[in-house]
Length: 125
Image (tube, rainbow, N blue to C red; front, side, top):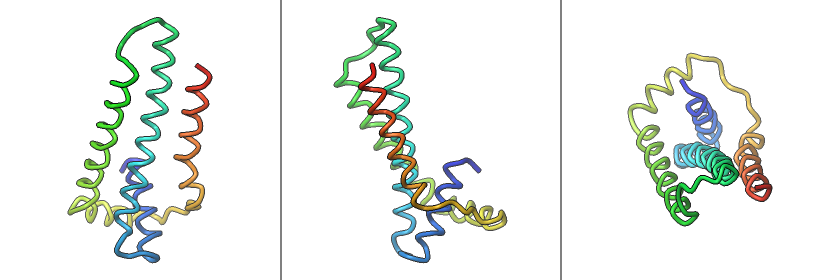
């Protein structure tokens, strides 16, 4: 199981007791949000790197459109991956392991910190 699977099931188990019908949607949104914020940080880093190296790869508009398309793809990939039988199989594997004890507020704060790092990196370049 990957780190994203572990985070998904931690969110799923936490929100299952609070909002049983929306738990899967919240967990899928969180994993997609985390992955897209990491992708943004990586994209800002490489944009700054290529700018320093004087490499013309693509315009900023094309890069933002590509980022938006990849974020939509990530959400639908996660929606399909965690929506059906695969989630049930992974849930059984997760229940065999000991329960993860992460603070839910810290986990919600991680993508915000990554977005902050991407903003600072974009302004530093």
